[in-house]
Length: 248
Length: 387
Image: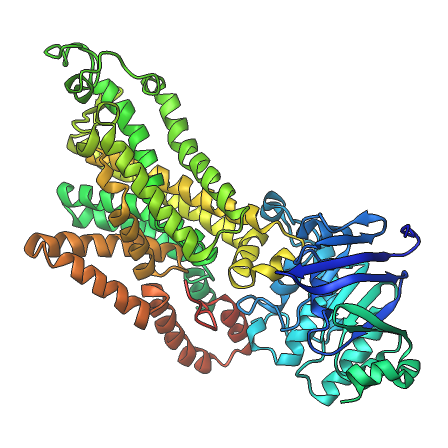
């Protein structure tokens, strides 16, 4: 199969095995520019592993991941970020001892080398950008507070904000609403739809209502392979999907 | 008043607390102590360089090195080699089989100055070596380990092993290094007698000035974006990596900076004490350095300095009376600090200061001042992290 460079992300024949167990096997997945893609599937289907492989945390045994025509499978993690791939972890990963402002600044895409970070200046541009993102994640009044004092939902938003600051072309979110209250879920869905404008987003999610509220194409993973792909309405009718996932 | 307070206790070390330390070191201690005690204090302050380096790389970077004696030793030996060559001029060593080489070489039947000793004829080279060699060696260790993502306890064990290796190497190569006795009998620096009282005063002040300089460097590093990334990667290394940072480089840098600062301490030690030996490199001194930082407060730059001074003075006084008990006492102090005061003496100051401030603010009723003080005061980390 030849790779099509018109896609933002093209994953071909991707395989990874851990001591013989194939967490992902011969997976093919293509994403367009500005596409919102939701990945669902039962536990152990390989959803998180797939994100780990795109961002370089786990290395592929076989196959390729091309982002804008560039091969990511052998690129170092921070270089993948520089290419424009952002990743949110499943549990909120924020720097609890730093202020909300510092958390956002730590992801600002300037001063990423040691000497760049030593010479980094908090100029007008940085302040404006941080305020802009803080407004988007509704934390603009809490910039000076320690990030550890935020609620669980706010921590999740802060991490999303840390990714927004990087302005990635591809944003990957691993269960962004896990552990959130109903109203927080709604606000997160709203936030994600807003974010998805102008960039591609991959969301892993278990909450079907939330998936439906996001819209976009859904990919069902099962045992490291793609079981089905399509919009939520069609998939709900698909007998295979019902059997492995929706049924229970 | 509030502004004054935050001046004294900024997040890591306010300029005020550094100023206070400078006054203690340069005015109070010279007035209170006689020259013998002052020289002793100067010796302890050279350990403070290492403690300061540990506050940076362990406290803030989360990199526990149990081999900081290596860098203290490299700096100290570089200086000692220069002084020894000067002390071994042909006239004063005329009774030797080969005059003009250090005495221990002659005792070990070496007849020529070894090649790696030759450049230490030059003071310029020696100063460059003191400043560069420890950091360069740290770079080699750091690069090899952090690029392979060796961290935590494994890193600590490897640095400790390296400290042992270096000690054994120095002891084993007696003819080139002076062996277990070290390099002794150092008298003059470019003809200037470093053992008389005026020289001791001068060296003490030079030491204090260099220490304050290193504190300011440390404060600057922590206050820029690099410092915040450093704290961030101590707590959430993966998040930092996947935010586009080459984490290994950030660790290598702080480890090198700590080594650089330790090396200066080592050189000042040799100048003030007049000898250098492997007993300042191995496991015991390396762990003592960690204890200084832990007792003083591993998140406080000035805390490391006070920790080095207090523990060392306590050691001198206690060890004179009960030499066998000292090791147990220092062990107990370390355990106590870890259990009761994980952030050392500096956190007492932080808590006390906070209590002092609150009623005053209530009386003042100035909300604005309160919010500015709360962001400026010493902040104890929210969650206790394992070192």
